[in-house]
Image (tube, rainbow, N blue to C red; front, side, top):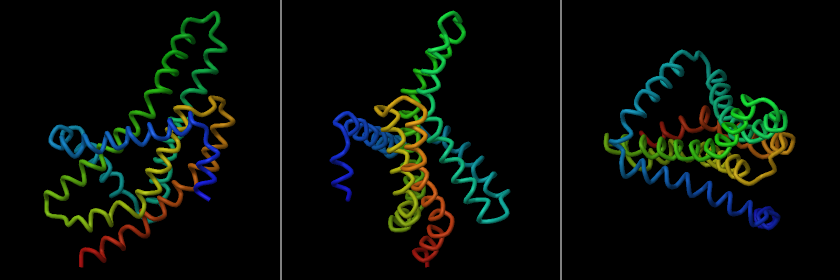
Length: 204
């Protein structure tokens, strides 16, 4: 099944997905090699995240928050270029719209790169910090792999499609619903209900 799916991809899309994977791995490498450099940036984000999570009263609320956050990132990545194209079509006599269209085109290219690199840096940074604090590698893998495999796959799919897929909003909406949403829903379910169980088991 996977071979059939890959065989249907154009060379352009294969290159785009390979590029998305490379950017993510590059972010991972940066986070591993320079964890101290990113501490001042990442720590406030982690603290704010824990504040939000601490205010949540149920697993379902946490599930909804994780799913919504990840969907928002994917939607922004996929929608930036169609939004720029729409503005460009209506910008013939308005310099403000022309500027917005140019910014949209830039963010349409830059957002996928930023999303992939930031996720890579964050995962690597928190893994290095926890390992340095004495958390076993097996526990780190158990805390990331169950949901991370699906979440990162969804991100790479969204960003790769943003790099080289059709720029019309209908195609991107269909791609999001059919390919990205199911993976993000599964990732959120695993993160809330499975990952904690795996970590507790490994920490015994």
